[in-house]
Image (cartoon, rainbow, N blue to C red):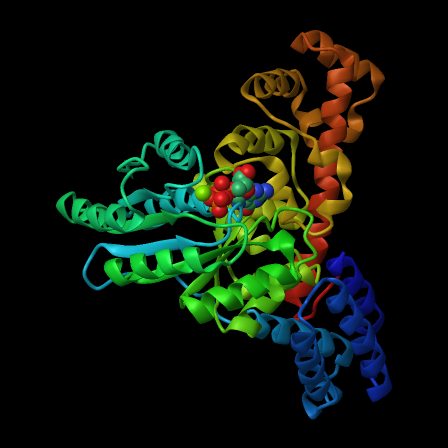
Length: 440
Ligand code: GDP
Ligand code: MG
């Protein structure tokens, strides 16, 4: 993937005590290819390469003590700039409710994202959103939103599929005012392609509702097409921001890198999975770090902090840094997994986690947590802190004590080892950062 290629390229230059123009040229040739292969718009690539080159052979880098690392810093900064620099927040109307239109092609993730956004607004911003079912064409679209509403315990405004979307939107805003909702999220219909019928309907809804935000939902998996769709919507309808969905999937990443540069519109949120809590504010800097293989410890810790109390999150962070994770922490983490969302989504944020296939398959349900708890509790304090002690006879004793099979005990110990290995990688990265460089 893009990350691997870029990391490989950057590794070569990282340790150099002296960087020549030729070195930079060679590196940028590879960076250019990696970006093109990741489906980044070619004009965007051209400008990016030129910008990095100019800075990388400049005084700022050549005069520094660690030119290799400085070059990488430049790449990171330019990549961040490309994706919009600062994080773009969702709009808030001076006079509530804030009206948000969710638009996009069929299957991009509008309805799912409407639910996720409602959840995010309530949980992170203490808002009281009203979701509006304005897709009257797709069979079961209304039902889909209503189901999400039930799941989230969040109201959904619907007038069935016999009333026009414009009328639905209009009445929904009235209702929101009466009931003091501060956000109205309108889930509109999509089409397979951008067409005139779709656009004129959206235009009408826009006319009537005067939205504060028109969020275009695009599917990262569709690469350049997603960027073209964004250009079309922006020209025809005018959008205020983008939600890039399915960034959890096996995407080449090109769309996320190009969309701001091509359309001028920022990515405001990233969809990272199908569940209702799998939506994250999009941070260009973190995304750049993720692409360059510096992991995304910040996102991870932020996510942890939402669900765990502050002190615990700090402690976890310290333990990750020091590679001090014990079986007790492991237990603690597992108990929180349900709150924090699927483990595989968390793991994706960690550097190098993609390579650890075994970890991706950990599925944790309540029953398993009880079993794991039983196993860990059958360990002595010393064993919990020092898994290397766990030889065959100790494992047998633990299996007996916990009432679980020896295979299960072995599996747990293996999973724990893998988790520690991963923490170690993160530690290496964090230490590198502290010194002001970028360790890969
Ligand atoms: P709509 O037609 O634009 O309303 O799209 P839907 O909200 O119905 O989503 C289409 C499919 O994409 C559904 O199966 C969703 O679960 C899935 N989906 C949406 N967002 C994401 C995401 O961020 N990650 C993943 N993996 N799937 C997503
Ligand atoms: Mg839909």
